[in-house]
Length: 134
Image (cartoon, rainbow, N blue to C red; front, side):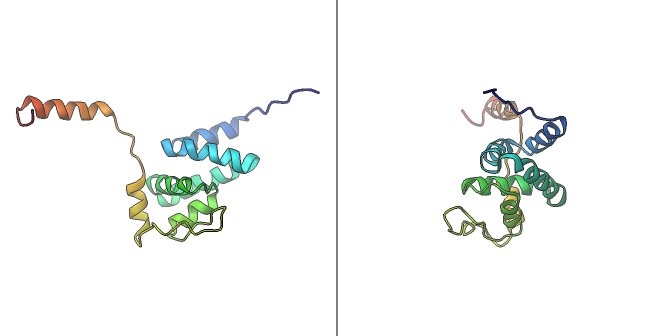
């Protein structure tokens, strides 16, 4: 029996790269999509990228983080979170109890910004050089 390997096409590689630009949370969500949705993961990533265009990358990143907490890997789950609705989990429990009324603002605060850690070293060093904190 021959061993088959699945090679990623150029278009699916571009889709993956665009999806991973949503941040670190997108990497974990990508893995979950591939495990649960298999070949349909590209479809879900495409829909999620459309949500990022419509609602903003920071809102979608927060929604990805929230959905990943409940192992809910689908574009529908991300959209339901953005809209402030409860997401459906595999064990039939509602997972949206922790979402406040102003969902989009909350999701923006959940997204992790990419920042250079050396910036904080500079701030700390500047503060200690001034003699204020030792």
